Image 1 (tube, rainbow, N blue to C red):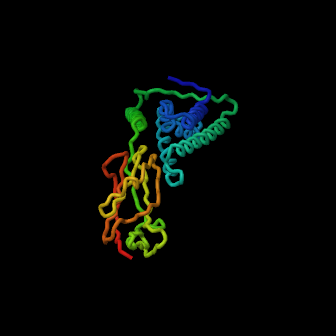
Image 2: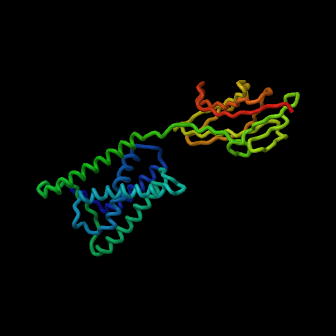
Image 3: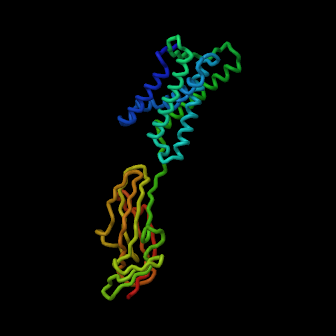
Length: 301
């Protein structure tokens, strides 16, 4: 079977550009999946092979197709590996932009080299798709069959991974920082007057605060639940639950979104080794999602 086109390289460039537009402008569609597979598995390798090997002699269609697929996987892997060490990371847009640029650059090189060689002939690309010649050498037949099987397996695996993407690990990061945003510098000692008003607070790093009338900490939440989540935080001091109006929330966070806020901690009575519990709840549930604790001493001034 023969498939003739005016220019196979230009068709790949046009399809790559259409995929680029569909990803940038159109929400997820089946078109993006169908065009994305050859974009990753075939286009980069084909344009690279076309740029390196101008003449078709010495390489049949199956070998060219298989080599293009192998080179495409190698190119996209190297592009992703390089992006991993940049500020962009391995995300859809950087991989799309980088691979598209690679395809266009190798296409320009291939067209330039072929036009130089074929100055007097009209340039047309001819792709011949045919099964291996079963009358040829048996070793070559086996290798060709293995190559086709490997290519089909790669297409199947990538197709399955695209259709059924793996969900990343789901967790919520919950943390507490002390004064000035430092880890561990929590309030450790309170001094209160006879009216049970805080007059002085000492923190873990030795800082003394006599102005605020409360101990300050900073709470933070990072949503990694792979979905929109709603959180709330409750503070318990020495077993006493604060009034419901003091509950922090609802705090609505998208996947990967971060929330951070400074709050004040005020004990209700005197006593040493009072435990401060910070309880995190998610999606209006009654089960504690996460908890943090530290201890304070409360003395009379």
